[in-house]
Length: 108
Length: 122
Image (cartoon, rainbow over all chains, first blue to last red; front, side):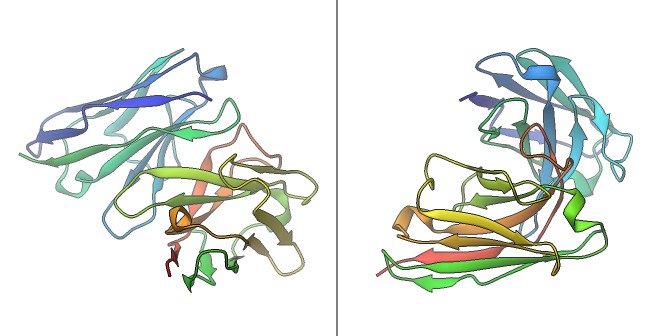
């Protein structure tokens, strides 16, 4: 099973700043099948990024994904107040599909 | 948005059973695999089970293998999760999710329902 470790656990930023979230895999993620999801309190997760860098159809372009192999990054340029949430990475290249523990983005 | 509406959650004693349902609309249901993901209170996300679009292939997490059964009725656009021999550690919010492919695995979850809460306690 591939273990995903996200860092930091909590990231505090001010609106308008850039946020960089990391996701490291215990082994290489096949075909870079790595997704990022956003979850706000009391809501379901929402797909942001798939295949490491492809935005979902409703994902604003301030969100970008990068990386390959074992190291992946989600970058939020010019954080908007609506972006404060928990972010999870997930690998879906190997079974079982596994999630990271999440990074909470909160207001500085 | 593609609605996915879960139901069937509730309070059950350890060792009991529960059947969750997820009604889908707005897309060709039989063309996509479906997945159940759970989230324990205050915790992260855990993949539970998946079923192919045709219903002929299923996969389970080790933690539920042999106790949970995923199934689907494509005539009713509904996916089910039959949960038996429930344990306290199965307490969680259970989300239904639409996969990005017809087949099980190697797919991300493109849409999620709002979840249904399962509490296992004596």
